[in-house]
Image (tube, rainbow, N blue to C red; front, side, top):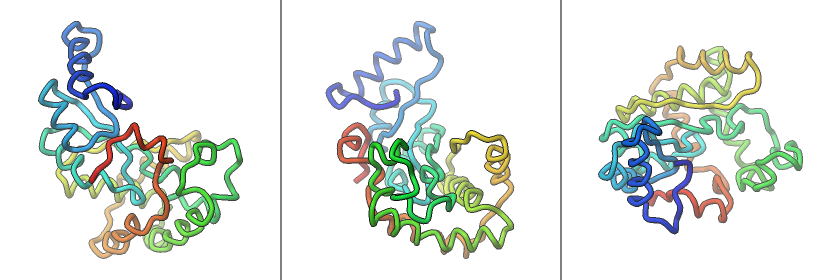
Length: 213
């Protein structure tokens, strides 16, 4: 279920989807953008195989409850936008002007990619670039390695799903599994999420995602 319907109780939606499993029409159930409490509520109705939510150095709200609930229930975690929708690659110095008007990050718009927020967030990436240089890696690889190691801390199976259009980027992303960050490097990256300017979605879009409190 890509997004829960705010007008329908979650247990009702999951119960209906569970019937599809029993009828053999689908094999497993997955949820997207739910809180830990919502995951537990859903799991009590029918087993959940995986949860998909945004998780990156820029977006760590899931660590408040969703990650812990998934680990406790044995639910796999699919981390989407692990590169902060491209921001963590270091591709932008001013995303507010460098993205075309047709780019979805401007169309929605995503607050983190607009105006002063975009400039402020680009300035947060210095530690990421320093660590990447020390490893002979890219900023994207360090960002992906960070997600993997955070999942290990929580005892969680994670599947990061960075988007890519090029084979070279696919190979680059896969090579991130070979990188292990030191405790000192993790400490340098720790403050980034707390300093990010702007929310990850517009106010309207946030109505359809679980809000961690």
